[in-house]
Length: 384
Ligand code: GAF
Image (cartoon, rainbow, N blue to C red; front, top):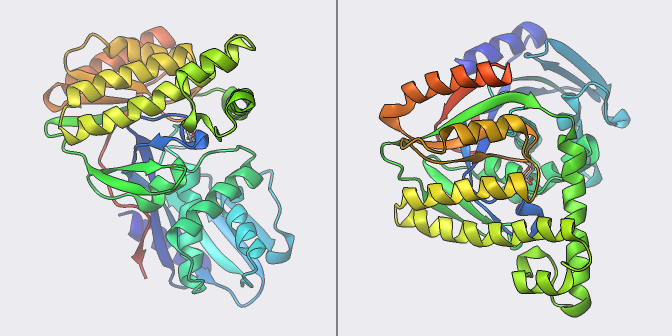
């Protein structure tokens, strides 16, 4: 349906056929804020995606249209710079990366559409960056590897959106595989697909429908706090390059007496990396109960130690904690809003959704949106 819709809009606007690329949003089962600490993450691509329809031009113009916002954006290849309009930056950031790599591009027309809710922490921006990189690579025959495109997308986000994100979101969007989670080592970038045999359990996302303004500034602050912790450890243990190499004993020795807040941040990360490794074993053993318990612990750490949660996220996790149909739940992604991820027994979903929608609306005075996430393939061409 999405293909027909975007094809038609593209045709009406530019009067020609387009190459169409789909790039999905993502969930992350466990391993939060570990990517920029050289740790591991366990994301998966979902059935909600960004679509880009694109065709080359003979001049150096870039003409973009975003269906959701019903907005156009035009510029030329020689005037690429971050725009005040938010959404074009994810496309322009990729063009900028390609130019910095020395590719001589031509102009292009593009229409962007999708069903990844914006601001829900499902990585619509990473999906748009990956879709753009993949589409330009294909259209101009640039011969880039997927990993190169992922790294360019990450840099685009740093430079054109101003958030020093890790690599997880782009990697998940590009490398996703249906019915599998990706265990990614964010240091070596080696990865392993782990089958998600969840049987009668589904991944349910509860969208708080809030995105607090702290999200990007506090994200960058957390990164700095982790780096500060590493600096102090290095004074005694020069071999430690990131929190991936640190132990709780090292933190006790080198960080605790210097700054209790930074200690708390670093401790969460060191524990979260360990927790993720054990959670991957749970998944391989099909022990979803044990995986779910770890998700609750992750939430506790993100809320109390890393302090990237908010009252809406805490409320949602608290509301399902004692429900036997919910095996695990936690806030997901950068924090300060977005979704919680819940592992829920299939036959209990309808009742649970009704119940949580009502209490959330009543207590938080906000609507709740619910998605059941199916795990799908990563970035792909859907119309050549
Ligand atoms: C955001 C970032 F983009 C990711 O790189 C990751 O750090 C995540 O927050 C937290 O795990 O989604």
